[in-house]
Amino acid sequence: MSTEGDGIIFHNPMAGLPLSTPVRLPTPLPSDRLQGALHQIQGARGRFAVALVAVHALKASEVRRLPLAAVDLVRGTLTVRRGNHTHTVYLDPITMGLAADWLHERRRTWPMAPNPHLFITSQTAHHPTLIPVSYLGLRAAFDQIGMTPRQLWSDRVLDEARVSADTVHLIRLFGIQPSTAMKYVAAAHPDKAFPKIR
Image 1 (tube, rainbow, N blue to C red):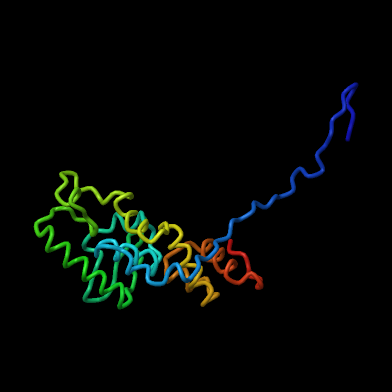
Image 2 (image 1 turned 120 degrees about the vertical axis):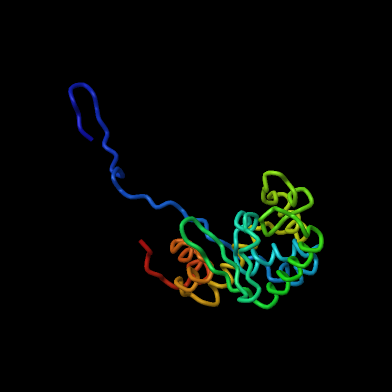
């Protein structure tokens, strides 16, 4: 504290000290809620979309905008464009089967659809502006199992972090940011100390 004339000026002793912002760590979903989830979903489109989030940790916004050309069943891959780079997803056998089912249904139902998106509906297949499926249209499949896309995405990343505490592995597998990978590894292994990623 200092005085100037008749006034008193108080100095904050905490001024200039860095304050850490609390980070909300992810929490896993109960495993019993995930068992048999795909079997509860009606329709090949919904099952494939949910698998891309629940198994391969794609964001719902990415799933909506995937082009039909993103899927390569011969190589078993799915290409996701993220800004100036691409992330390659290597499809597991279950997701490959779901992809094949949806592509077959898509061709059978809308053989001449001009819409270039992977996921289409009766409203978007021949829409003049070639729009992607709406979030609500995609979300309907997740509602059938009572989980949000964000919950499934978070649970998948956290589950992988439990198996491997390697942040580089998470970054390569899911194409996530280093800070996000570190956050999930720390949540999965709270007893361990990890170096900070700058």
